[in-house]
Length: 330
Image (cartoon, rainbow, N blue to C red):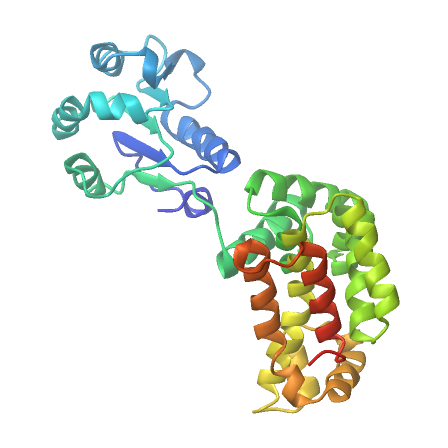
């Protein structure tokens, strides 16, 4: 079970042993709070917390079998539990066969191999809660749900992918940005793409958009000038190509869609903002289908080149890409 699923719909009963795996600390914190509430309510005296490298199995089992003075259950949490699990795997396997009915053991680990005997034992009770990163449609869904349930806002379709492009993969940072965006738009119901560009991206995002717009419109002087500003400010080339990708891969997908539907409909289906459809249609007609169909390949080639696949300087690779995307290159 993924942590987001657990938070959305916690199970009726908490297993005697719970494994929290993965590196999303914000998600783990929320899951732990839910676990504590379900197991011991607000009774902090029934919570014992240890660090894996500083505790032995005997201490843990004693804690698990000690009756709480105030509540009817205990929760024993082991942080950074990888070493503890490795050293005490046999003992944990034995405990898992007959665990205390009045306690919950939480093992906080970064990774949890599924092929061990202990993992197979615990799989029978759905004990693992994965607090790993979300990607693609799952991450978009989480952003939309969090915006709605936590902040009472709707996230526009175009805003989610841009937020991912700018923030990365940390759910805690996403939550912070959604909080700021909700405050920023005030009484408005919907967080728009423009709000994300302004508040989250700042001048770097605006300059990146100016660069991609200039390349699309064939104004290479403006595109190269914006690129120079970004590089001088310390923006990494892979991040810049990510911003170019975000814009132009929609144009590439719109071109692919146009084989089975009108171009304007294909661009909308690819995620091009409605107000930009006319401009992008003109751009694609100007450069022609042959070059439009090579957009995706050029984006992938530059991405590979910046990761070591080319000996050209990063700036030259980016300038060449902008030249090609403008329709002037071969």
